[in-house]
Amino acid sequence: MGGGGAGGSVKDVKSKAELDGLRQGGAPLILHFWASWCEASKHMDQVFSHLSTDFPNSHFLRVEAEEQPEISEEFSVSAVPFFVFFKDGKVVDKLEGADPSSLANKVAKVAGSINPGEAAAPASLGMAAGPTVLEMVQDLAKVNGSSQIGNQVQTGLDDKLKKRLQQLIDSHPVMLFMKGTPEEPKCGFSRKVVDVLKDEKVKFGTFDILLDNEVREGLKKFSNWPTFPQVYCKGELLGGCDIVISMHESGELKEVFSDHGVDVVGTGAGTGGTSGPTGLSANLNSRLQSLINSSPVMLFMKGKPDDPKCGFSHKVVEILKQEKVDFGSFDILTDDEVRQGLKVYSNWSSYPQLYIKGELIGGSDIALEMQKSGELQKILTEKGITKKERLEDQLRSLISSSPVMLFMKGTPDAPRCGFSSKVVNALKEEGVSFGSFDILTDDEVRQGLKVFSNWPTFPQLYYKGELIGGCDIVLELHNNGELKATLSE
Picture 1: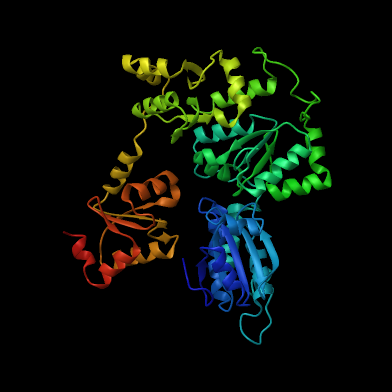
Picture 2: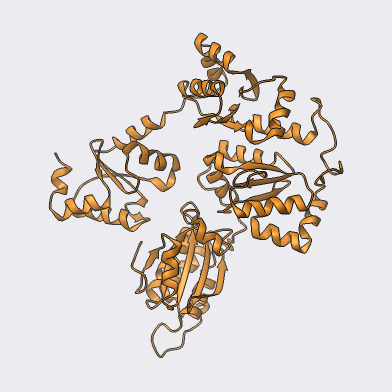
């Protein structure tokens, strides 16, 4: 799908510097922000590619919104698909959502005539886009109807993760998913939203998405909102930084909070004034319950599994890894309200605390004793907690699933990057049968394979479980006539 700029092709932009350089050229330029998990993005990308053929004197550029946050934030991209139109290096128009007819129309307006000396016909009538695009417009209309950015796209999320995300969203009347904590934000956008919420004098919960990659990536799909921070009120997404600031400045944000009975700091108003059976506020009681139930096996610890902050937490993490079970975790050092409240809620004064299906098991000593006696494994089995395949075992299994195995972006029939496309073509020209795995569909495999193979990029080609290399090595072997021999030794 990749290409070389203008001349009837789509180019994948890899950096802001690259984009700035192309803008300085002055030629008409159309930028498509997309996400590999979003079906609407994929449909619109096909339309986009065909338009690039119809308007060969313009630059058609593609940006994966999640992979290029600096570019996405510069143009306030809040959902995908999203298009930005440039003329003489300046932004002249934008388009949100899956609207093929509007896209073709706006492209024709920015790019000018298809042929020199001819006026651009209105694409809404099918004159500028050509018959192929017209068919695609009609097909997309049948599939998606009036699909716009407001529709939630939850492709690829299992029920367990959906439930966990919903519980986190509902854990506080106003919930902020941010980078860092309110006391120490890790990005300027998160800091601005924290300041807005403090200025509104509302109580709000937070979740540091830098601590949990599953939540971070899952929430993008769950909400169809590719960037952070994200603000929710009573379970409904309000938006990101720009929208929240705009609502704050117009007074609309205060109205939303008031209409939903959100508690104001220091007033005891709204929903936060009553106490539960533990003596904790109803809000905190509900939040703790949601956190405890956010994963079948839940560990409240100091630090995180990859970086425990105390020996006792480290011990329980190792026990759970030895039992080969998935588990959620919460770093109690990041939230003093949870840290102190959970002691009261559970009547357990120290950490870590291990829960299985909402029930407290105990701390590190109890977990270790139960593991040694076999009782922990018995409880896990009785509660229906199945052992997971270790990532390393999973990777070995995938690598060995075919004698020749290619880990790539996309599929052999639809590669999602130029390097993957080149390797696929080389293998096909050699007449080599091969298996493939789309690393865009599984971030755990994508990141894990980099470490496992000590090879930081994709594609990666394996033969009988051994790494051959990436695009450059495969092409060199192909050009030297050595590839087929290497894959048949």
